[in-house]
Image (cartoon, rainbow over all chains, first blue to last red; front, top):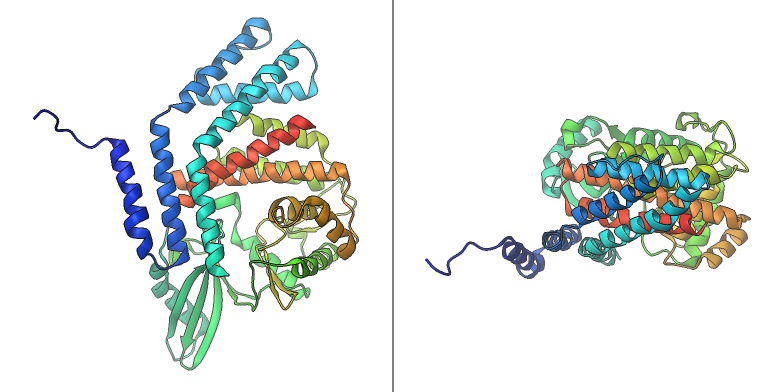
Length: 147
Length: 318
């Protein structure tokens, strides 16, 4: 039938969040249960945000491109690996090496790779904002109940 | 992941076996307390005949932070024997079939853990100094692992937490790898090796009438550089209470302790490294289903990232 559809994942998650916040939470008795409900709603909001942006794939692509540029410019740098673990292992090894060695590669690592990883961390943190906020709100609620 | 109610019947059976006597043990009240994430803490009020008792149950959470209760209990018993203020541990139970995880039970200690004021943290600073002055050899604490050189106090801890992260993580974390290399290079030599609490500061001691009634949460304790505890107290547990300069004054006035600028930087970086490494363990605990509670996901993701970002900032600036 035209117009009929299943609910989207976003709608299902939003419904779950509102049910927790508006129906279940007012009924909960203990501070631990309230804190868990706040954190569960936050977890669902985080899930919802992650559906809208495949952050890890984009970050992997940026990291791969950065490492590939090192491999192009420096004969002693291997071509980047194919998966996220290999990319991150290579990036870590380059950061560690740049701490103890000078030279153009270390300068490039400090000038491009490190800022890129700092930006990725900031992006991950922004994405995890709802989780963190829920965690802290639940935490403070428990403290307040205890006092 | 257990609800409080699901613990009542097995706990009654366990306590009846431990306490003995003709009367059954009834758990009259079981309430999750504090906000501990590596251990679930419950206040347990029981009645057996006419006898009412209050215990605290400390229940592991599927391997969060890579620590176990066995060493914690051994340390707490040794400290109590040495006259240091810790709660008396009644029973340690490594059998996970009873409550789902290893646990131990302490006598409830009178006092408050939350909201210490300046008077209380000054009292705690004096207590912490006593902890650092404790003769750990005489107290039988060699089992914690004795650093072999003055720099080992720091290096052993860097490697300990690096190992925890490597065992728990799904993916290498480049900035954490860099942090470890920086810490290894910068590790200071300890002026002396002492018992280090590892999670010292507000909320990890109980207080009553301005005095410390007991020091809690010993799971991170080790032998090492006492400066670790002072910086942790100021920059982690006590960061919201006073600025660093105020903490430095309190440490000087109450414990005769001076922390050098280089020590502040190193141990601040280390504490964030440790936090980032420890917190990643909750992600595996969460993903494996060992503890699917939402706080596990939040700690392993958001909180881990907060520590990682701060570590990278310190390393970048130094």
